[in-house]
Amino acid sequence: MTSLTVSGRVAQVLSSYLSDVFGVMGNGNVYFLDAAEKLGLRFSPVRHEGAAIAAADAYYRTSGRLAAGTTTYGPGYTNALTALAEAVQAQIPVVLVTGDAPSSGARPQDVDQAAIAAGLGAATFTVTRDAAGVITQQAVEYALTKRTAVVIAIPYDLAALEAADEELPAPPAAKVTDDVDGGLVQVARLLAGAKRPLILAGRGAHLAGAGPELRELADRLGALTAGTALALNLLQGEGYLGVAGGFGTDAAAGLMGEADVVLVAGASLSPFTMRFGHLLGPDSTVIQIDTALQPTHPRVDTFVSADVKSAAGRILRMLDGPASPNASRAEAWRAEARKRLDEGPGHQAGSAETPDGRLDPRSLATALDAVLPERRTVVQDGGHFVGWAPMYWRIPRPQDLVMVGTAYQAIGLGLASAVGAARAVEDGRTLVLASGDGGFLMGLSDLESLIGAARSAVVVIYNDAAYGAEIHQYGSQGLTEKPMLIPEVDFSGIARALGAESAIIRSLADLSALKDWIDAGANGTFVADCRITSSVRAPWLSEWMRASQAAKAAVAG
Image 1 (cartoon, rainbow, N blue to C red):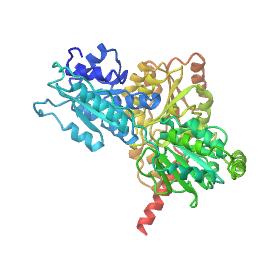
Image 2 (image 1 turned 30 degrees about the horizontal axis):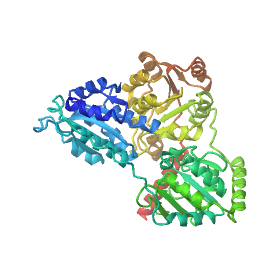
Image 3 (image 1 turned 45 degrees about the horizontal axis):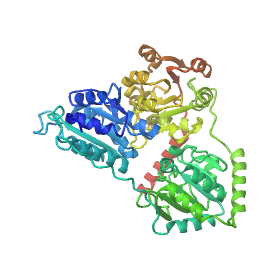
Image 4 (image 1 turned 45 degrees about the vertical axis):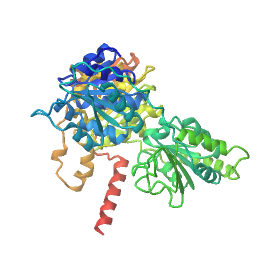
């Protein structure tokens, strides 16, 4: 290797894994950014350090490619902690390159950054002069194999010093987990005997590229299919019921509850997906195939630790031959499902009038779906409005719905995440960010970052002048709403000041401004400041509130 500084060696090794870096320059990372630019890495500046990791996280969720965030030490590092925790909780491989205390000892202003990261579940790899490249490689491989966030720390006194020459080992070959104990034989037997089979796919199935095999398996069995919100439309086709959990329809949930054998592929079966214990029938047999080492839910009867794509392929080979004696019953199951979905209630359409005269978010979401470009990638911030996109908008592919903040229960990461997704989208897709007014205000500094990064972006702000989830959860209990309210902000005016096109949307007819912008080429960024009512409670939140109340009652009893 040629002579490089310690920061340069870190950048050099990273350049073999990734092409994009997001962050804010400071004393602790200025030498790294200098080296990264010389190596041709694309640096997208953000305006708050909290956006550095959020953008890199969303870049990965959108493209499947690794990216890095970077901050200076101390306050720059601590500003990034919420996004770092979200990446850890969501199992997103991402790298945070940051400055750190000098190797000779901490200064009065330094904090124990490695201990802080450990508290969040993120490992820290502190580079040295002798092994900057090897340690960087170890960090990246750890992030990729463990599916988590890592921190690469560059001590301040080493950043500009010459690094030692190193010979990097070849990256370890990827290990493919496969069924080794015959568990798939039992799975194939259970599926072949099913009269009302259901295949439920999660993000793990999407990441494994298992969609084609699972769809073929469903067709072979006559199974119904569904997906979690993070695997939306992966198994779309004959027998597809849509999303499982609180964003799904009651008609679809009723059918899922009647399945006698359920194959859960790459999904963790969170309480939300399971509708807090009510999604699957009490007598259904639940099979889970996942790269985890053990079942992730007590309802699982048969568990196989395996790569989902490989496992589905093997099950298909096991089912080769005469059709299952229950195949005709399963096909009848599909026909019944089609009829009941067509006749059953879908998502509520919303109303034209509300008590306060503001927009019903359901009718707004439906109208937006008709206006937004079909080729879209949606970034969804956390908040009360979180279900409107997966419930009412067409999401072309699983990677076209990036739901941030849900793993760590955070709001305010949407704008930062939109920056990363905007850098990752290809093929002329339009980036669509859905945010609430509270979360948008938290990340407001990075509206300028998005405007600079996006070729084509639409920002939809569900502006109810409040923290909506709190209004519905606690205001409804009689708690004071004063801290839950936000003075109404003119986001449209702010957007125009920063260089975006914008409009205040008070009626569905006002969406004509957005439609005209899209018809003109959808170039740049358009901010739709949508004034919605706080009188409509999302069904998923009602379900969550009922489950919480039942849990409290059980404890009290």
